[in-house]
Image (tube, rainbow, N blue to C red; front, side):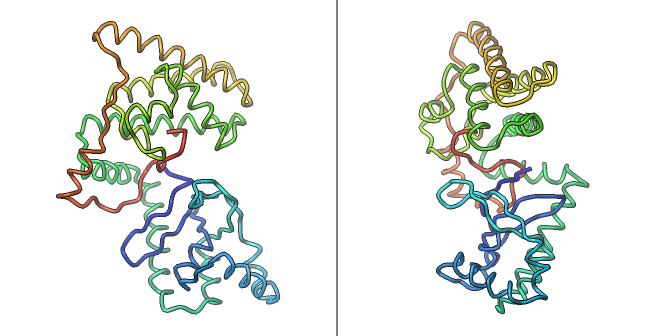
Length: 297
């Protein structure tokens, strides 16, 4: 499940609101809520002024105390601490910001909250939405199944990293690149260039089934090494990532010897996606997985 997700709309009149699943519920970026409600040219300044005004109101102090600063991706691609609030607090804050858009926002907040709980109780529903989204983009079912397996494994790996002391952002990117470099003898960024992909594109959405399978093998190996060695802290995790990548690279060389050609492929799905979009508008559904990233695809 995406947890540092980029803004995305659920329907034409709903806001582009960044959100993060935290403490068992969605937390929403307050400046995004304000941007939607007020259409302010500077929602950040609007929120700072509103927060100062609310701080003088004893009745609003409890709501302000419930705000949580979480790292969300900004427009420049960097993760920054952002004031967020859960649905209950957002609804209270909306009372201080009169707007004809309030009711659509209330309905949207209720909708996304309910959908997330449904996905927890029935994860197959989320998986089916992902499959439909990829099919609409022109991917075949064989590739889709490999992509889903790869992402589920990736989520398990990043959970291990978090639990063992690695920090999201730079350290995750370094660990990912260690595995990738060992497996394919090329960095993540160089792999994107080889496929002629834009810098922020999710590389895995343009891997061949064999590239995905080898990535999964190396990452599964990393998980096993972390657990067997009881690794803790970034240096030990990096050692494991390097060893896992080396194992994946050895597997790649065996495969290449058998098939008589490199596993690394310049193929991408951009042209197929463009052709598909000329005929079919893909469904606007929240992704089950991480959104495109800069250097840890």
